[in-house]
Structure formats: structure tokens, C-alpha cells
Image (cartoon, rainbow, N blue to C red; front, side):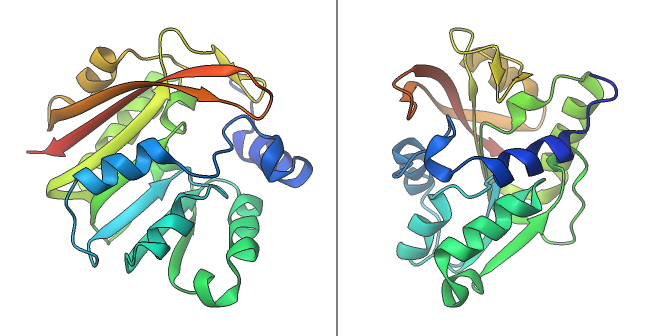
Length: 207
């Protein structure tokens, strides 16, 4: 995998596959919305959806009147698809960031970092360490991270490439130096192909 071009891989996915034909498709991201609701944010708190692609989470957060929203994805095509779906007026309200989450730099700090199914694509220890360092640097004190990965009972690959599985205990341990665990959830996600993917979700607060 050392020569693997992950950006090219994801650009190809978002160029060739329809929104409803990817395993992570969710019309209503119930679990993510529930965690965000329980974080008791104000409507002007800064939220970033990492690896958000063209998911529907941002649509729902706009409908809930959140005003400081960012979407980060390695794929330009994913971001363009999301913008097209939202329409120019709504898309203009979002900060769109084309970047790799494992080496993302920003002057802006966030109150909530959401990542459903991006972190588990990092299988190299250096990338994982860089991601954790990035989260530490970009989340405000008392800020929240909501992160979901395939569980130890979930798939070992997604979109043809390996992922790293985590139990909720293992996932929380990755961030335990700087974040305290608030809540966990293990859920089954039903894909558009009528298969089931088991996810570990953790919600943590920065010390």
C-alpha cells in the first residue's frame, strides 16, 4: 500500500459511483445527529465534518440552524457533489475544505469534530498519530469529538481497501491522553446493498 494514491482512489469513487450506490449512504444519519444533539452546542459553535464527502449530515445541521459548519474531504469531487446537491445558496453557508485529515492544518479551532468512517482508513501508525495530533490541536478545550469506525465485528475492507477495526474501548484509548470518554454506542448500519456493517462510536471531550 506504500504506493497507493488514496486521493486518486477517492476521486475515482466519487466520479463513478452514485450517491445511493456507496455502502456508507445514509439519508438520515441518526446516530451522528443524536451525538451532536447531546453535545448541547450553541447554534454558532464551530462544527467540522471530517471525511464528510457528500453525506447528508451537513444538510440536517443546516436545517437545525447551525451557522458555523465546515466539511473536510480528501476528494474534490465529493465536495462538489455535496455543493451541487445543496444548491448555491445553502452551499455558500459551508466552509468546504479539500484536505487529508491526517495532515490537515488550520488556524480555526472547532467545538465539535465529527468523523464517521474516515479515521478507520488510516492503517499506518504515523498517519494515526498525525490524526490524533491534529484533533488535539484543532479542538477547543472542552470541545467534543464524535468518531465512528468499523467495529471488531465489522468489515475489514471498504471500497476495496483495508481499514483498521476498533472496539469502543480501543477507539477511546487512541484519544485518552487528551480526551475523556463521555459515551459510546455500537450500531448496525444497513447498506443500500442490504448488508450490515457494525460500527463503534465514541464521544469524547477534550480536557
